[in-house]
Image (cartoon, rainbow, N blue to C red; front, side):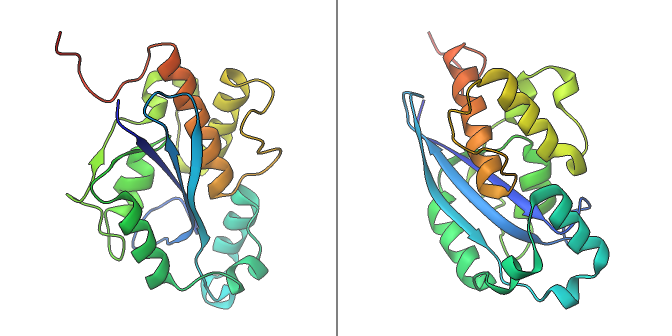
Length: 190
């Protein structure tokens, strides 16, 4: 198995682009042998909270722990997009729910990931049905899967629920599934 890049996002709402935007994005890389991971990228996108509205701000705060101050201190969207594209284009990528992360957000402008990387099956695909659900609950589902499969908080996320925390939990779940033989990126040929 090659290196696998796990991408997670925190968004302004559950609908996807263009109604909702990516507020945070994080990328973790699982080593080829599945023994460890490293954090490759983590950024908050600069946004003016006054332009988002109460519903989006409540969603960011409640689901991801993102406050207006975090958005003011974020990085320029064009720079974040460029950095992420440089990291993941041409790579094998997944997320807890690729339909949410890629299908609703990263395949659209300005991210434009369509045909520029290999999207592997969702990590959640190999988990029990109760660990799958709508995007507005995804942060809870990742936490439940992580707590159940990775006792002792090996990724050191504590109570975090931002994009970096979600990516670290998701890659930890992926490593556990791979170690148990439940997830692989390529079909066996022999």
